[in-house]
Length: 269
Picture 1 (cartoon, helix red, strand yellow):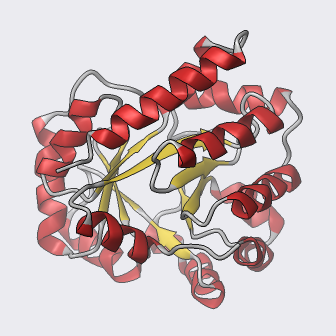
Picture 2 (cartoon, one colour):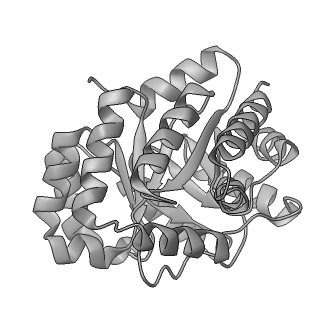
């Protein structure tokens, strides 16, 4: 199946006067088939794009919800090879953009060139390597350019304006704005520090900004869009619904679908 680019997605949502909503799933959580059906349900329920995590044993940027999702995926027998198959199956179902969020060791062990070639062959739009700073990213940027994969980077409140300028020169697709310091996880509110960061990043670039880390409620989505973001990324809140309903798949799917629809509705400007 052909794939829509991020540029096309952002243009389309802007024309519809709405922001972008991107939910996150761990491939294989709680098992391969359920995970794939959940991913399909997300795009059918209004998600504009997806962010997919490869399960990893030591996910330093991720909080308890994602760690538990990783553990469930590993217990169900997920491997890197199965993750690639998952992406292929997902691309056969949807033309909506989807990208990876993972850790450098998985890419390095596989071979950078080979890893990016596989992503390109499948039709993956982007990759964000959570523990790879831009200063050490020359090899992956070379591969991303070679194979047409958007290389996404995270900026946070600790990112200086000088570093921000550097990131805007090499980032692709969108800039991932971490709304809080620390690990991922659902928070109760979006702080003024977060909205100030969005405004500061916006002063340095016209690239699309998507805010993640701590976004879990419709009002959070509205807050980050009002501050100048183009979209919101939500992970832990989705994984929490999965974890709370492991013994009842019907309820799990119903609750996930309702949540996605509610969050997407909040992107209407």
